[in-house]
Image (cartoon, rainbow, N blue to C red):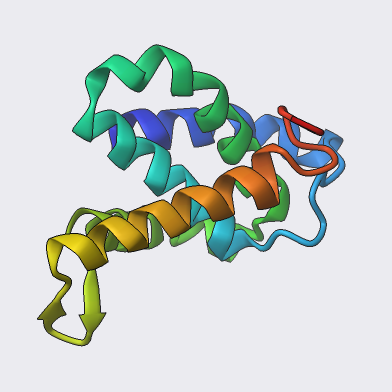
Length: 127
């Protein structure tokens, strides 16, 4: 989590000079995708080198989309998303079965990939 916060902080100076590459992709989804990437690295540390570009992209996207109030809340928002991905719930207080958890993670990953990373303006545009 500290690595993600450091990436976000390093991207903050870019906020004023960067145009939003994905205007249709909201702040909450950007935070979810950053948390998804962090969770993926936690589950498989071998992915770390391959996911640095994702972390930088989502950190910059968050910086562009955030207001000062959003940035002040970033740690708690990120922690909530990361907790949700680490222990998915179907309903409030009802843990997901392993199959349901896999569906949640797969769906989140696809959303991050197709709606952000491979979208027009994303780092994997058109792939």
